[in-house]
Image 1: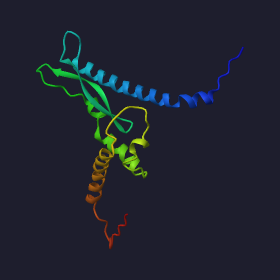
Image 2: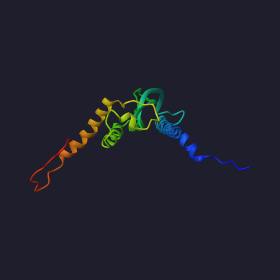
Image 3: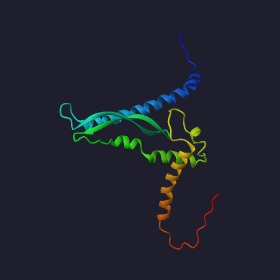
Image 4: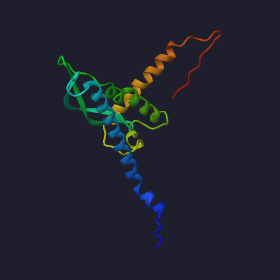
Length: 163
């Protein structure tokens, strides 16, 4: 007896779960990468160069939003906090700026930003005021680069038109 599955209908029904699952896998990969860095910093058992120091609430930028995580902490032998490069890179404000800029340059308003990104993770930092702040920070860098660019030789007039 051969069993045939209605693949098209099954895929349509599980599409949202697949996206949510892949987002959860992405978050687990981020945590695993941070744990790997902690292992490298702490060193071999019996000869630690630093010590694990539990975890603390933090966030990473994923899917155009900030997502809460429990980030691992490390203390050096002298007692000071040892920062994780991977955590800083996953938390990068540039990732949030580019996600916001990508949506807003496609004529998505800051009020509609939350509805324009995939709803596969619970996150924050997607309110219209937060999105406006991210947009301002993203465009500020671009305007600064534009203003610092040298003027071409022979330029007679510059006409700017905007709404």
